[in-house]
Image 1: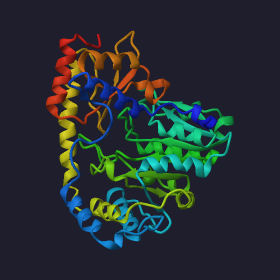
Image 2: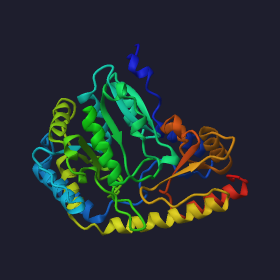
Image 3: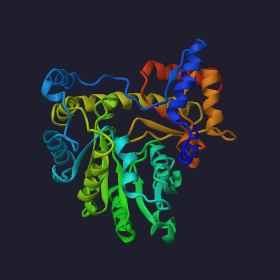
Length: 389
């Protein structure tokens, strides 16, 4: 059977490809150090698991959940936003449960993008932003994220004729893959731009709680009047080590939240109620594990940063996320260098090209391996004379 034309535009998913490479290396007996996918290597906190265990045994959670999320989960999200960001949300109109934020980030295109519409997408970026534009038969317009601009898009470089035909703009700070952060001043600039061109900003805040050295990431919704133009996507995956649980939320502009909800009503049947109970415990229960995890990632960050700098790199410590965005040595590209690391050192890292054309001179490290494995990776690089210069 012939597939749809849109399938010809969609590349294999980056992390599925990494899984294949890992499997091949393991089959050859390689001791693989996986610094690839951003999946926390520590378990979900016990207090969340215990709530889930109790909830899953309750027959009242076994039927269909409300499409938009249970009232108690949406209220918990609103309380979390008030406590963490001092942002007021109406749980009835401005909060929607998601089957992980990835699902919402993909589906919002179908709610807003008609064939031929532009979507303003950063590059490098989480691949879903671009791919979902293809699903909606839209056109991606690339906003380069350059190191000299602190990996922030230069909105002044977007032609007016493109901006006026754009429906969505995707932003993501703290950023995957670069680890960059943004200020409220930049968010204010984006709000003014979106109002001028009638664009809905889709802000991906999946890494809001992963921060170091006294940095605290802001919500886009902290900007006055940002709800006029912004829907923000958040997730429990990275904050609470719940990647496999598949629960997140969309908040902000009431019309956008409810439009996305109406689309989802026709696509999925919502999040298992027992998982929503666990989500409530995550958001409103003890937050102690966040600081513990951040201390763990900070130690790993420092080991990797110092180790790479000894090998000739000149890297500053990241302030947020658990990703490090590292330039490849002169004369190489990201795919070749990632292959070299795997074949000579047994280290898996994603090539920057997987995040877009502006990523081809970088590779990404996820700090999701124990300290001893990170030290071993650096040792293998040194033994194999893999240096920046």
